[in-house]
Image (cartoon, rainbow, N blue to C red; front, top):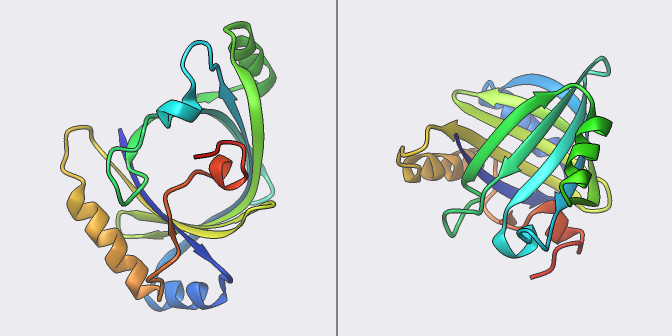
Length: 183
């Protein structure tokens, strides 16, 4: 699966939420996420290869919880965060962490965020308040490997324009923005 994602740094969500209502985007859920990122510089340094391996613990609408192991490949274009993404649900984050640590991976950072998700056509629009980093809007859509993604990127930027966002686009990961991974 290829995740096509564009992220923008914003000061406030108020006007954006109003515009989301105007275009009839559907508010889906509110989540609290803790992402624990792993790296193994001796095996393959994700800081250098632009990849990511994380365990995400999520509480949805203050009730349901899920745990997902995610691998993200390197970005494959120059304007978005488009990359290969593989996810699998797991039952126990501590056991999965132990497996990774026994394979030589080390936890490098936790990223905590509150995420409100909206759905619009085939797009997922997330309003993220990332602890110690800031507020971001992420618009994404998944496509099959081998599909052309440029039309989707163009559509995402048109959607940002509808939301009144024409600047502040960010390709850096939250780890880079936190100063964990530096350019």
